Image (tube, rainbow, N blue to C red; front, side):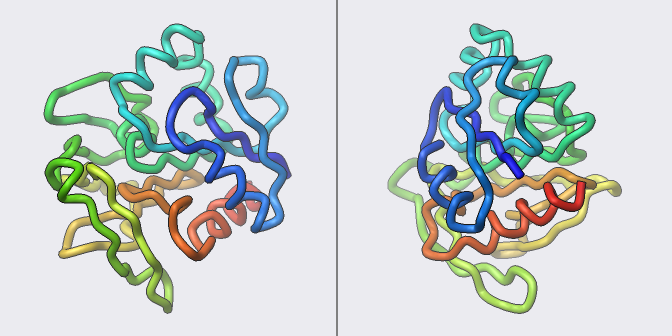
Amino acid sequence: MKIGVLALQGDFEAHRRALERVGAESVEVRSPSHLGAIDGLILPGGESTTMLRLLDEEKLFEPIKQFGSAKPIFGTCAGAILLSREVLHPRQPSLDLMDFTIERNAYGRQIDSRVAQIDFGSRQTEAVFIRAPIIRRVGSEARVLATLDSAPVLVEQGMHLAATFHPELSEGDRIHQYFASKVLGG
């Protein structure tokens, strides 16, 4: 199993290490040609408008959207923004692969970032929020897997997964393991 990590911006190296800890081979994705060699893809955090610009420059936006019609994608923070159907504050394009509405930087500035515990499955999991977006609406096709203060923070829809936090910065690898199992199941 090979899982690609978009390596244009953000802490893609931390995602690669987490994938390797859960037994997946990780590959840095920097061009459309890299997509053909992977079974799943992670869109890391970063700054979503910058990521959109870089996706456009590298001619990756449409190929990733096509990839997502057939294979699993996991978006974290800015990556979750890219997966959404609708982006608020300000509005911006997205891949429209998951039915939820998300608001950028909804929890405040960098100083408002925090580490919290969320219930995922039967256990608590550490979640690192850095200038995190908030999911404002979840459509009927999507399913909420975890919340924080009643707001969805981990959502899945079919083979795709979106987190408003940074699981690659947490102590455990449960979220990456969950995504790897989705890739294997696909």
